Image (cartoon, rainbow, N blue to C red; front, side):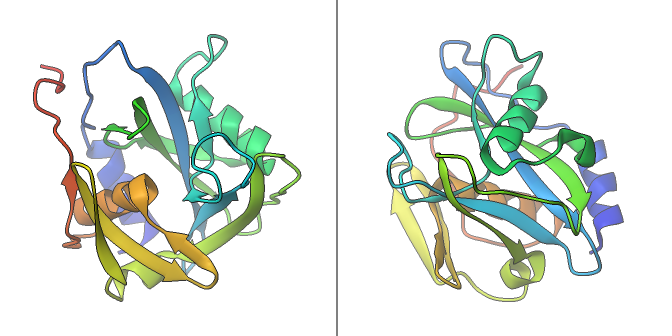
Length: 196
């Protein structure tokens, strides 16, 4: 499936919204490059970070009071972490909310960016930024399935990077919903959290 079909499906999608106002909110940017072989942009977090140290993640972070909404959070964090020019990100919409093991209500925000978008790793939070072709995930099988707490999801090894945990869960859910993939997935207990 091409980017146009993905964009249309996401625009028509009513994302899962979890109604727990007590959780701190976070937004992450699922940035996909606009090219014949689209790629998703991921980061390797610094080993000096208090959480998710040395892990692969989407650019993103905690919502601040100055953010107008969760999309603004994801864009601000992407600019701070990888120097992504927000004007070059075409926001398509929000994907399904999830809850992290650290107790954050996480909203993934899908955006399309130019293939040659300029990115930087000057942030102290990020050790590396890299791109993974969507085909890498969709044409092969995960290297393993992880069970962590009430979550189950795939783990992929790409070059020197390990893509696992909540990042892998969000990717797998996106692929299952919009690319008809069938990745094994368990999102923890969402009972009582779904907004009516």
